[in-house]
Length: 466
Image (cartoon, rainbow, N blue to C red; front, top):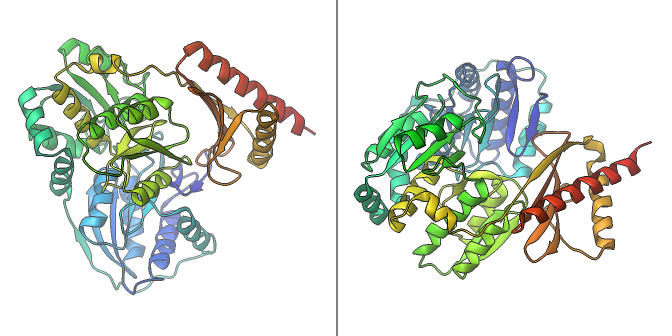
């Protein structure tokens, strides 16, 4: 892959697209960005378990200490590192991770003082500073370096979010769970949290940095976990990516739940005893209508934003929403947390199972059924805006309702009827990839819509061919 630089952070293949010098230049750019508003910023830094992460972190710390104080919290999850920024009242943070990308890749995310990803405009400023750097001068260190273990405090934080009543229900239910961090950062926290809930834990792949399966958790890579759930008669299975912001959940029958279903279940659980007045759930515009239907059942509405975690986080903050997320990426966002949190998502599903006193498969069967197939198509980045405009015109000429998020590079959603839609968007993290998703409560209809979307996309592409 080539170096990908976007509001989501920086990613590339280690030693090919990025190296320690790239990390140093980005650390310098980030420190200059923070110093616009303060003299000597405090920066939190942490990493995932990839082989290259430690040397990249050390390279960044070397540069940061020339202008900043630094707290190194070592190996930890993305949600825990974001929590640490808030806990230590830091100016910002850096997470060394390539998330669900393969082990040979790496990268980093930059955080603001709330612990969330930088806003797109701020991230662009950091990228612009980086691109102007030709060399780095070695300066005298002005900052102080401390090392802290935040895992216990983070565990306290997520258990507070689950709540005393939820904790007691989980303890009384004596649940059994299969967990697979796959050598990733979830292994740092998960045992400590589940033991405090009296949960029977069956552990798979807990050795840090040893990736037994592909890092991205999905139906294909979690087959062994699903088999273990059935074999041990467990109540739940959970497979994590490397930085544990993402989790894929498996019910007691070994079925892997889609991210859309997981978010719907989280909305069901949060709204079941929600006493607040702000009954608004925030999702991206590629999230299935299953979430909207569950929200409406609880007299709540859904606010849709453009794809991108920071977009969901900002709207949650603006509306004081109790929960949100991206159905297309498994995991929920629970304020004051500022990102998807795989471990907290898992705990909230345990709380749901305990409250309903039912098997997860039974709870899943009670959900309305929606079908959300998707297709990635290769498309030259220079044509993506033109194709989007042509697609919009074709559907507008047919009289369909059209919803758009973001600018001309954002989501384009075609509402075909009350319960169905087609969605188009060029990926901003994988240049050259165009995503098409359909959604309907009728399985055949969802397939037809996806086929229609692909056909129209290809027709528009043909128009642009020289």
